[in-house]
Length: 145
Image (cartoon, rainbow, N blue to C red; front, side, top):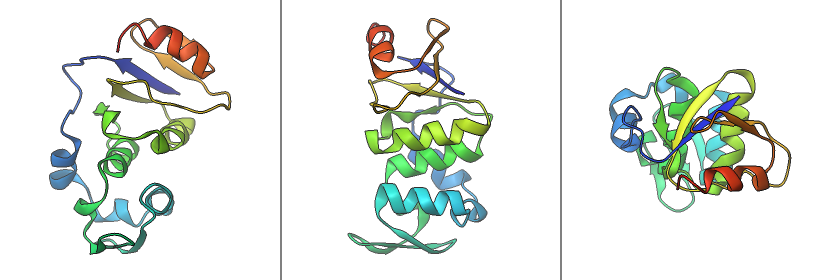
């Protein structure tokens, strides 16, 4: 299940780009799930663990990926940390839900992310409530952001 804490959270990693730069592992980049995320969110193709082909930037290292993709990769692999997912756009929302399908994950958000029209299961840690739609999520999370 995806757990979200809205607003300031002391223990969350706020600067995900800097954290990613020093802590990502090459094996993460060539993971099939991550390759799919990179293709979907950044429209870029992983050529190998150190080279990604971006239609906008050309050949880039993993540190050149968007902040959203870097945060998604960290959420997937660094399970013991809580990351500020406000670096992610709404195009990352479905990936956060997919990552949390098989294992609980906790993220920090400082904005209302659009998780779409399909039903979902998210626990809002500020209140402990579980929501299943954007309507339910907005009515609770709106108090904290």
